[in-house]
Length: 554
Picture (cartoon, helix red, strand yellow):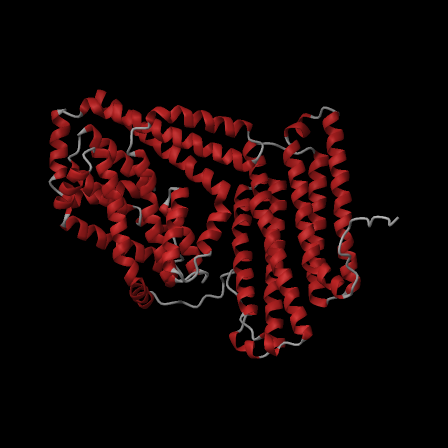
């Protein structure tokens, strides 16, 4: 009975470690998620740059699984090559070792400091990013605290005969160690947590060092299983290339490492006497060795994966360009026309995102909000594809109208992509915050926000029409919407403060959320006006260079 309670206690401590790691990951993703995704997407065609990016992103996220899922998405949608994505994964596997290096030192005394700073940032931070970084601080403190508790719980049992007998049976079979740790890592979705627990066993002297090294190999193998199971589409074998390549590479690395496990363990233990630091060093050496081995042969490896998993034609991917015909490049008018048609798909996507925000505000549907956030990737990919297509055209064949229309398309696509960023980065976060806290807007406040959203949807349709027809009258009408939205913002804020002064509790609780949403809707409207109305009015000579009043000359 006592042993069962002790095992339950240790399981709770491990759960605390996983929760702390989860808080670190979610905090970083919420604070810097879009920036990290763009960092990965920017590693086009350079495997060494991609390797460094993989290290950086995973060091921040502390999850090679999350990095692998992002890289898999980019590869399946054609944003980065398979060679680049494989290099990202090699860097991601190195990136997971860095926090393990830090945790290998005895820094548990500062765990309360991390928690204190994190709580202060979370409670006092008016800025969303500050609160998210507060989550990171709390998570780091919980991780250190849980490791300290695990070490203290298992230390009294280090010399127990029963435990020694069980571990003795396990340690004579390194392959069993690898499979056991791989299973636990798959179950926990975290190689970092598994390796940290292994370090605790090594420090307490419960598991021999060589067996700990084999367990580390299993943790590295297990972390490649989740992207294989969760990444890619079952309908398109090509989307499975990256997770399969990563998994096969891990298997090959584990086989080679097992062959030299005994001498490597002895060499590392001589250089690094501390058991926990020796385990962390082996974890780092293994992943660096994998990178050195595979980086030079990635092009050949990628070709093999492409041969094993060929592309299946699938026109259902909304992020895949439909109208950008390569043959149309020889004729500038046709090429520009198909690029404009592709930009229209961005307008359709943005309209769906606005509808998702409306549903989230009305019904409190977090799943709908998550789907809206994901649709921003469609805008990003289509915008990139349109830019690459237009910049690949031979501008020497352009006349003045071709140049002007190309600038209009680029302006339209860029502003729609930026409007999508506002929805993904700000509006969805605000609606999620309201749902999570169980807050409700006052009926008048809710109606004001929904009216602004409806007007914004109408303006998006008007912007699309102006982009298509280049009608100056429609452009003037759309441009006036910027001033109209400024008036709506002022009127909404005034009405909101009147409700606050009347002591309405629901308005007090949702005050900052309400004003932030109004601000973001106004910003999206500004992007719509800039996307379609301004280029037409500028061409007509009707656009002022400044809204400032000119000084009187004396």
